[in-house]
Image (cartoon, rainbow, N blue to C red):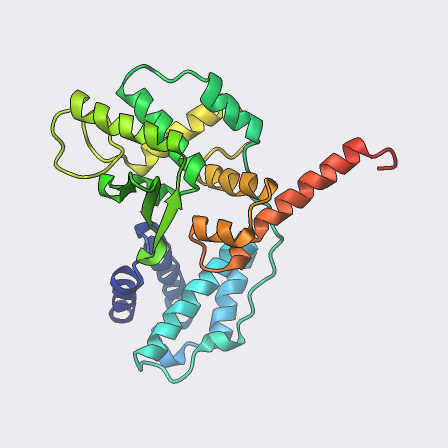
Length: 296
């Protein structure tokens, strides 16, 4: 099946412009699926893969205690794979038409309270060195823009619009969006760039955020940085860059920001992905009601 899988992976990489992480997930899902088929049904032609075989694999995953959310992701992978085979003329119909995704319970996004974010930037001390400057700025950018981890790591100085106080972000699928930032945030970026030129050796690339050796930040560094500093101000279990993205969106929603505007700032493809933040607002209202109303 490599002859069918590899062109599909290239399609995701070069045409859809998916991230390395997403492509790896697709590849792993397909490898697991075809390994299952080879074990239980032997070598099959593409057109011999039926809905019944796919259901059998999904049932096997369920028996192995895989969550509905993970199973749905694998179903999504197979749908994309067979849709691509239809597009290429390798199939006349997809076996996924009869596959129904399991229902999953809605999970509210985890976020950091606004007062805790204020504590982080007002009272937590950052080391007076290059690492401390970089750590503070990356946390500020996360919270002020709602960027994804991959987007933040990839920001180039050339993407900073100093005249209009904005950052051009290259998001999923190579889609560009513009995120406005405050004058204070722009001042922090200007100071960082100026200090970088003075403190570090000449750098050959254009990345905004770099370590003390002038190299582009890697994901694990950013993840550990966020976890370290959030641990100083909150007890929530999840302490990741994506939690800061959730915090950005939730605090905007709680302050009355228009949902469509938040969608554009986050770079969501549809409004449905953004609407989950309204649930956080409703939960907050319920909490206020319970604490304040005499009949609650």
